[in-house]
Structure formats: structure tokens, C-alpha cells
Length: 159
Image 1 (cartoon, helix red, strand yellow):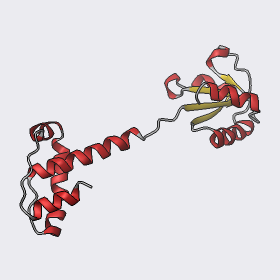
Image 2 (cartoon, helix red, strand yellow; image 1 turned 90 degrees about the horizontal axis):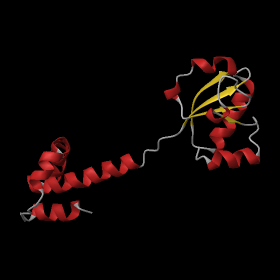
Image 3 (cartoon, one colour; image 1 turned 60 degrees about the vertical axis):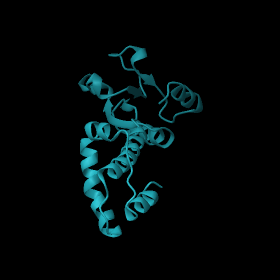
Image 4 (tube, one colour; image 1 turned 90 degrees about the vertical axis):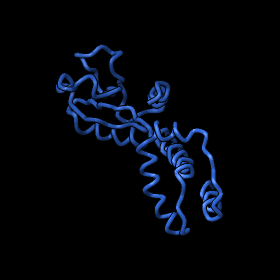
């Protein structure tokens, strides 16, 4: 929406003053440079030079779009799955979790290998069996089939 009036201003040599021009140059120097580089295609299309003041406004639009895109990036909870052997029931559980929740399954391990997992590599441990090495508050024990009651409890902790 900004480009249409900008093209009009450039074609008819109407100057625009940006009161925050210097701030844009200081705070968004790289984005301004990249925008100025890309604007050369617009200049070629309309046959006129685009002033730095006009480029600074376009820079603001690009900056807003980039910030908006960043805010849409979703960080998924990291989950470690544990079962007796680390294979069969955990694979069933993984399928169920991925189908019903937005989670990032980091690893599937057997209960014997739980001590090898670094604490900062996950947000939740979900297990189909008791894990004697861990306190019951350090993991979530579920049925591999994810029954309705278990689904409610997982939803309640925002997985």
C-alpha cells in the first residue's frame, strides 16, 4: 500500500520528509542498505531515482514485516519419550502425540538409557513406564494409547 503513493511521489518529484530518518539509519542500517539495494529495481521500473527519505519509509515496512514474521515462529516443547525398550510403544506414542499436539520429539529411549539424556535437551519426559531413577514429578507417565483422561492431563500442562 505504501509503494503506490511512493511511486506517485517519485514520478512527480514530490519530496517527502521523514522525521525519523536519522533514527532509521542508525537503528536499521543493514535493513536500510538492503532496502536501498532492492529499490533499484523499482527505480529502473519507474525511470526515476528514489530518495533516501522514501527508502527509509519502505525500510520501516520491511522491518515491520520481518518483526511480524519473527513473532509467528512457534517454539515447540521438546519431548523425550521413554518406554521399556525404547521402540514399540514409544513409536505408537510418538505418532499419537504428533497427531494431537504441537511438540518436537527430541528422542525415544529405553528406560535404561534415560540417564544419558542431558537435562537441557528437553522440556518434558513422557513415559509409558515408571522410571525409578526419576521423581514422579520429573516426568509424565501415560498409556501408550493416550486415553482421553491422559489427553486432558497433557492439555492442562500446555503441551
